[in-house]
Image (cartoon, rainbow, N blue to C red; front, top):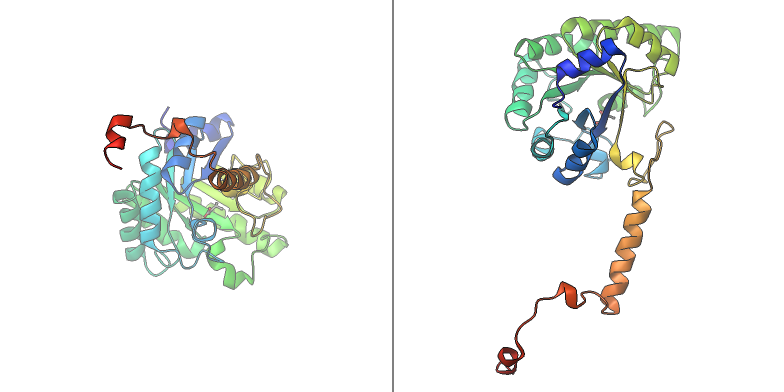
Length: 275
Ligand code: KIV
């Protein structure tokens, strides 16, 4: 069944856990969609795992539209959420609305996600007023890595935890239909989940959230530059890929590939005339 904002609302009411995974290309998104994930996030983490940047700051609107449109073509049932990249919404409410509109029109998103709390609440309100569903994102918001002084857990002390709770209520009030909580203590995420009527999706935020999200290269062991504590490897696809690449190199070298079944035939009387 096609997932939508209603699926998210109903899941919260029914206490049914939601699943979200990131994807950035057609083939991977198709596999996830067929597996039955509720939502596919075209995260700006594509800057790290697809483009090799050390953070997400250099990701552009064009990157998000290019990858988002590929994922949207694959997703028949999953709700596609496309991230608004750094400086596509912080600059003004007008920019936020125009760029959210582009992700919907050109990327064919079902919703957009943006990072931040009270400081972007006018943007969230204006985008939702246009009929565009918004996912908010609090805790470790990677676009603010320079302000945080690194990729660190957020909300550990009373003041910081209170601010995240207040921000969660503000983004809900502004119209967000869902909230991603990244790298916050599990009990804090649980408390926020209780206080909100919209679902929370956790990443490094414990199992009390209404759903979970992971970056697919992390959960499949395909990205080895760094692995956050919260990642569980559900398969070691990276090792399988590396072995397959080695086997390919060896088979080409010893000419066992391509074999007859991978080659096209020509009648001998035709080929003989060509010598
Ligand atoms: O960009 C991303 O992949 C994200 C998830 C980590 C939530 O924002």
